[in-house]
Length: 234
Figure 1 (cartoon, rainbow, N blue to C red):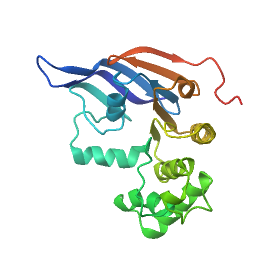
Figure 2 (cartoon, rainbow, N blue to C red):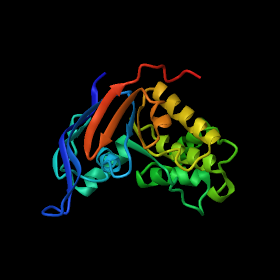
Figure 3 (cartoon, rainbow, N blue to C red):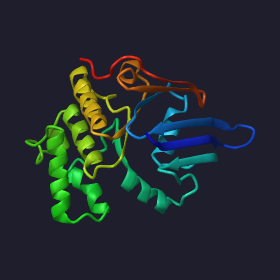
Figure 4 (cartoon, rainbow, N blue to C red):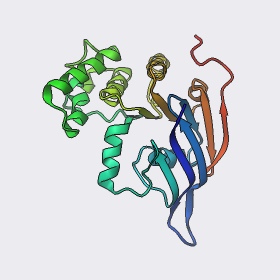
């Protein structure tokens, strides 16, 4: 496997000076293509800041971030936006769906921003919703769906144009145990198909379902190890 993500000596400092906060403190981590990784830490550990860096939602104070051998740590906002559109599918805890749009329209929306033609984006969106088991819910709006179904719409939106990286921030945080199992099953299937899946979580049970666990504490990598158990065991 080749390196997909390379973080080198990364720092993120807020309020530089006497009252500075080091959200990330000289972090080094490499994630290869087709890995299934959980980044775990308590509130304030730095995991959300690291997610923002990996997702090209923010840039570090110092250090570098290579994504597909391209240094994105000093890119402009427009260039970062292009990288996010091409490389990363986001799944958020709060679903981030537009309430007055149908499931199909929610999945299509990012594709409109990417300039995908109507026929192609409709086909991509329908395929993605079918992929997550919502072929009969395409015309439903978020208020007409359960939390688990809404999260599956969010996953369909993330995977519609087959980005190489799936970045999931607490993807099961608002779900019951049944929906949590369904969502984790979908993420595992995406990994089996060759995607790189990175989950940000505070939940040890969720992290235990990944191949590799990276623990972060006080802005530093505390542990980084590969699981010994088979993650696809029932």
